[in-house]
Structure formats: C-alpha cells, structure tokens
Image (cartoon, rainbow, N blue to C red; front, side):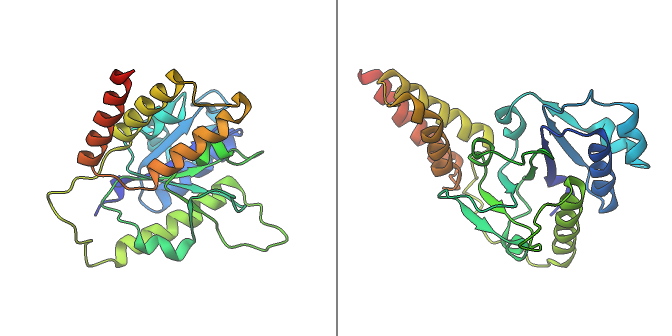
Length: 237
C-alpha cells in the first residue's frame, strides 16, 4: 500500500491561493499527486507558488488536463466530494467508509470549483460520492480545507491498516481508460441507432449510463467481453 496511489483532483479551480493551499495540504500528509482539470488561473503562477509555501515540488510535478476522461484514464476509483446529496444511483459514502476502500488501487479524490462545486456531469464519472459532515445549516467548506480533512483521514487509514485486501491474483480490475473505451464504444453504437431521444434528455442519459458502468467495478476481462459485445452489435446493423 502506497501513498503514491492517491491523487487529489481539482476540477476547474478558480483561485491561485486555493491551488497553492491544496498543494501544501497534500504535502502535509506526505502525498505527492495533484491533478488539475481546466484551472482558471494561469498554471503555475507566482501566487500559487507563494501560497504553497514549501510544497513547490507538488506544483512542479502536478498534471493538468483539459477534460475529465484524460484526467481519470489512469485512476481505478474516483471519489467525488460533494456538500449535497445527489439524486443519482451512485453509492454515497462518509469519511468512515474510506476504511473499506482498497488503497492498493489508484484512487482519485475529485473536488469541484469554489463557486459551483461538482455538476452531475462530473459526478457521473465517479464510483462514489463523499460528503464531509458539517453544520447542516452551513455546509460550505473552503476547497483546501476539504482536501486537508480527507488527506488526514486517508493518511491515518493507510498508517493503521495492517491486513491487505484479499483478492484473487487472477482477477485484474479494469483501468479507467479501459472502461472509458468500452463506454465510448457503447455510446457510439447507441448514437448510430438514434437511441438518445428526446435530444434534451441526452446529457442525463449519458450520466446515468456512466454511473452504471463505473459502479460495477469490472475486471479487465469483463470489460473486454463487453467491448466485444458492443462491437459485434455494431457490425450487425
């Protein structure tokens, strides 16, 4: 089990100060990986480095992506943080439930922008949603504060855990990239048969389909089988 498996993902962060503070929080608990998706400020910049204090190496080693699929392609489990309950068929967990997560896999914690948080579109890429318990009448947390709470909890879990998860060595979990490729093949075939009707409901239908596949925890073999099924269905037309 290694902290190198843990990534902290900031989706469209708006303030340089928050990006720097998040890098500092990551280093506080000996994590190393910061990922940004479409940051609003120029990245990196002097203000980010200044607020990161001694965590400049986290900034220098961070990765920036232009879309969700590229950011998640090497991550096995995505946990989206949210201050509100989502009326979606996705598993909601709390901080204590993080003890059940297999941190031998590559895990990414996804944080939304300061102004709007995460949309249902971003959440549809997640395996779980996580809510930090706060005052019900004042749930809003600063981005870096949310990150440091989760970093501390995960760091403690990794330190305390002594027994590894038992699983068959013959079963290899599918990577996010493999699942995304399978989903894209499925969606392409559905587009060809004009499945997404009415058109205005297409975004929600896409979110629900991604939710279904991501929460299944497919193996690489299962993903290949489904990809073959979707490809064959496409050839039949």
